[in-house]
Amino acid sequence: MKRISKIGTVAKFSAAFAVLALLSLTGCNEKKQAAKTDDGSIRVEGAFRGEEEARFQEIVKIFNEQNPQFHVTYEGSPDFEVQIQVETQANTPPDIAAIPQPGTMKRFADAGYLVPLDSEVVSAIDANYAPVWKELGSHKGQVYGIFHRVNAKSFVWYNKKEWAKRGYTVPLTWEDLRTLENKMVADGLSPWSVGFESAAATGWPGTDWLEDMVLRTAGPDVYDKWVNHEIKFNDPAILNALNYCGEIFLNNKYVYGGSANIVSLNYGDSIKPLFENPPKAMMNRQGNFITGFMQQEIQNNLEENVGVFALPAVDEKWGTPVLGGGDQFVAFTDKPGVKEFMKFLTTWEACAPWARIGGALFPHKNQNFDDYGNSLERQIAKILVNATVFRFDASDLMPTEVGSGSFWTGMVNYVVGAEDAKTCLKVIDETWPQ
Image (cartoon, rainbow, N blue to C red; front, side):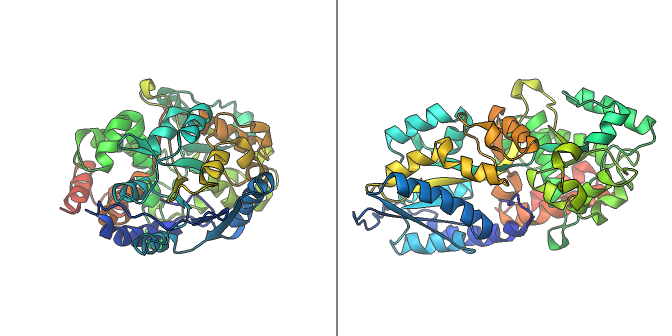
């Protein structure tokens, strides 16, 4: 997945290695029983490193203190996606792993490596999560995954002081958004600041826009078929969604610097025009990581300076969908302590320490929003928890040739006018591996 952090798109490239490493699982149906020792030790592995690892270690510490009969240890790796494949093939997997991609969970489950969650843990998921999270952690009628730390990106950011001065209000529907855009243009302002530039990964922010619009115009079922190529990339439903994006991207009055500026403006820098004096644009659509790219004086007082709302719904029957990513914990063994730790992860007690420090969101229904460090994180956490539709980033779930290749370049070609919407989507579809 695109890791939603200040690092930006680094994990886009690790996804490619993960895909290659996991190919050997295809067609593997022989269940391989991991070796078990019942000494109370539980080994957990994942991709959390640095600050993220330190925060997760605090959560592990709480469990260990409350359950002295067990001892959980966590190890993070920069090459986790490859490492976990090697370990499973060698029959030496950890007891538990934090898997960043839903497809990886399904491949491991099909290969017989994973242990379905105990009924007691499933009951805790039913009690503490919206149904969508159980669905995302399930495969072929079995529940395998528990979601803990997640990221979301379907947000629109704005300059709170400037909006208050001009009397702008948060749009609740897509038509409200269109009305607001036109009012901003009439006021001599650019409604949006949009940036696709990201060095070798230029174009990925455009894929997020299209993914958000597919969820809003076609719904989650069509989105899932699109991700799996059960419908063509250039299906009419996807073309309709891209045309919604084009209403903004291709309208020079709507975009700071005009359409030509989108490809040259870095995605992290695209938030800054909102907070210049005077502001150069009024809105920026991006994930919860974007606050780390705001000017330092803005970061020093986020609550006073920054407003945020969910990108509005188009078809209200799906509510306000949320696009994002997250890590689901899965079990490779059923040794004593695994069930207990997995159940612990479903509780707010296993999340609150990280929420208080900041930089993470959690989907638990039973959470105390006051534990988040500021009102912005509380607001986006509520949007996440209340979402009836959540989907992982589509480009990260697609074959590498598409998701980290032709999809990126296609969005660039569309914005600069090298390809119209139909041609753009057709060309991308032609790159889908047979």
